[in-house]
Length: 136
Image (tube, rainbow, N blue to C red; front, side, top):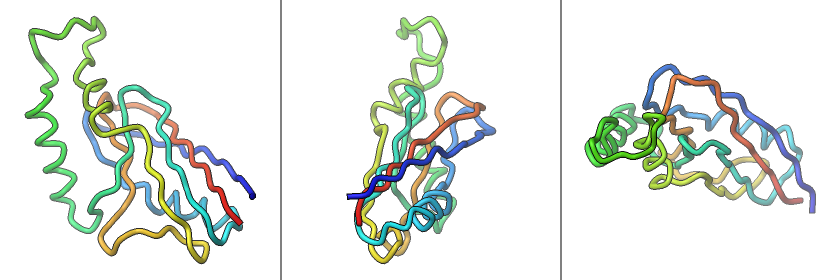
């Protein structure tokens, strides 16, 4: 089994933002030379996350962020964490730090409308995403 690792560098512009990284991850897969296998996309930050969802309609990322903010507001009188980003920690825990996507014919196997998103919950920031490609 061959393993290829790559770091992606992501810059967010807003406190809460979903950034479509499908093309960068797809490029990493093609460059790896791996034909069949899987791709793990991992976020090493405690106030950000990774998700797979609709990338064909910009209203869906907007709606996801809207609901997350309603569920976990930025300002809440009960937060104890002193850095002022407790909501970001909670949102990243809810969404998750990684996704695994199959690879076939040197391409990500995603549904017609699916894309891979970096989820920023404590921006704007410069971030890193780890991509590990495994297979033959």
